[in-house]
Amino acid sequence: MRHDVDVAVVGGGQAGLVTAYHLRRLGIEHVVLDEQREPGGAWQATWPSLRLFSPAAYSSLHGRPMPPHPDIFPPVDHVIAYLRAYEEHYGLAVERPVTVREVRSAPDALTVVTDRGDLRARHVVNTTGTWSAPFVPLVEGQASFAGRQLHSAHYRGPADFAGQRVAVVGGGNSGVQIVADLVGVTERVSLVSARRLRFLPDDVDGRHLFDRATARQRTPDPRDLEAEFVGNIVALPRVREARAQGALRLRAMFDRIVPEGAVIGRDRLDLDAILWCTGFRPALRHLRSLRLRTSDGYPEVVDNRSVKDPRVSFVGYGDWTGPASATLIGVGRTAKALAAAIAADRGSSQPA
Image (cartoon, rainbow, N blue to C red; front, side):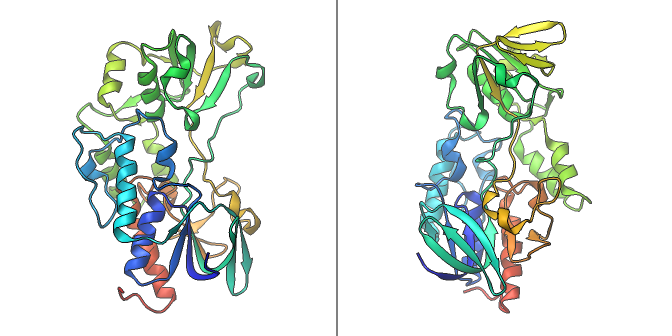
């Protein structure tokens, strides 16, 4: 591994690749450090039946369109193949597997501590996403549950739940897709949420969410915009089928969990498993020594750069790092702007 570099990009998924693409176009020396053994980022860890919310033509990174797929909403293996081809086509400087353990501050550089040695960088761009930091809310009695609990980040398909009584907690796209996956396999699947389900019209898909996010990119607080889209469920074909079968009838959130299941009001829901589809937090543990996070758990950023240390930047974590920046089509805009800002810091923004 090289020891000095202008920019170290931490994370080799979609955000890391498109950031590297724009850095390369501007002639900025960089390296991408990816913990995964293969290209594809967090998509490699999702369940096999997961589908994109948008057609392939509307799910492309800057510079190279995603190839069409026979299905309107491409499956996860199509996305992984696309990211692999994107990386290979541009010959992006990705080193893997590399685990970044810590980033340390020094007056003249940042030291990136990895399991394959240290390197010094003038800038560190974090593109680690959220998949490795799943969030599970605290519920009274949770530790007493005798069955199985897991987060959607660790769900691998319905076969593990055959014949069981399962509660899926979370009224967003992941929750309803997993319920649709479990219908007909489990003895009973219940969808549980503190929020009502909010479906988009059946002829609307993820393109419209992106367009709305883009139109409101001047919102005073980008996290308000992110909250607006939570629960805007895209009615994919299998989701519509599950809804028609009555499988998406919503139950209120648990009051408490007991060894046999959960209590909701005066009812007890007997369960063998609880699947938490309750979101994620930014995977930024490697930055802990820099103390960049505020009381709400997010680093304070302006134009994707840390207010406390502008040498540290963030791409692809959600709308606090740019409208729709956690999506394939949306992440390129903020990556391009950040690369230009880094080039300006170096005194050159001419393409190589």
